[in-house]
Length: 204
Image (tube, rainbow, N blue to C red; front, side, top):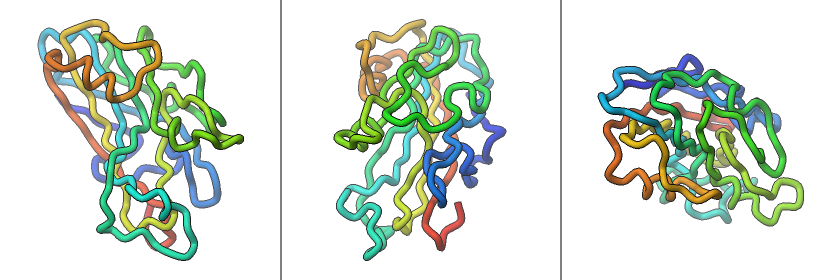
């Protein structure tokens, strides 16, 4: 199975059009185009996740003007998109078809491929308690790495081909629920990643 995007090159920079954060405020927050082929026989559905693998582990360092987050700081995952039950016949998601612009407090019912379900991304936890931004963030919300981070962040779009039409998920689900539910049902996986940074000395 192979996946590609017309929105950015594999290992290349992601344009601000597809990011939640830009250097002058919010980005376009459109979901990027994705397309895939060479699907395993017996595929009945797909699951899609977008994960930043370079999120800082110390939130006290984020967004500060008096320090830069070193490249060597330990990192963790930050989930930007969770989609389950994409029909087995689907081979493409158009740019901007699932997210187009910033929705404060999160999208309630984000659009997506027919019959699919979209879970909570990690902005739900990040903005919790913020009176202007707090809420349930469902669907795609793009990159917004700290502007004081010296490490360019990598955003992995991981697509899983599954042998079931529908995963056993709760009504309110996140990436961990999808990983647990698709255990034993994965026929194949493919991925690509793009990079993004808001640090003034690093190219986006």
